[in-house]
Length: 193
Image (cartoon, rainbow, N blue to C red):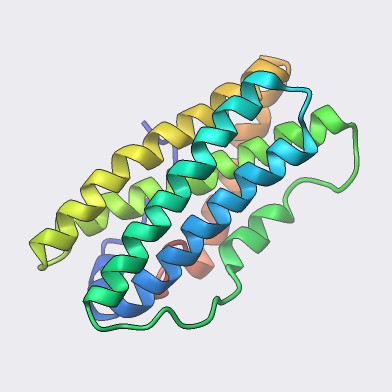
């Protein structure tokens, strides 16, 4: 369903389970960044009314997720800690050339956001299936569904605002690129790395 070209190495779930504080802190920052992305799309593309409406709801939902993760961090006796650069997102942003029309830039941003959500969904599925802490596993199962909805929403908007054939080719090329990125980053104690 997600179309990812390189599935996460199953050993990542073991790494994540042994470094759950790092995973939760990284996850909290991912939720913040997702909300920030939604707000940025509203600010940059206010003329796309349907997108603005969807991103308004998404920003609210992502901040709700942030609160849920942050509460879990505190309840487990952990501290939020500092944000680390997300090498995965940095690499993905290098794929599309800078510049181009506003419409092209929008399509690229939507595709990257969709791919980030797809990879998060896949990682949350692994956590939901492999974590020994069943309550935390259920937490990730519930979030996995949201991530899948976000992935499909971003892809839907990219196809709506761009030529479907071109968008689908860019999506496939981005998926191929992301698979190469994951070969280098796939086993770190972070949501995407």
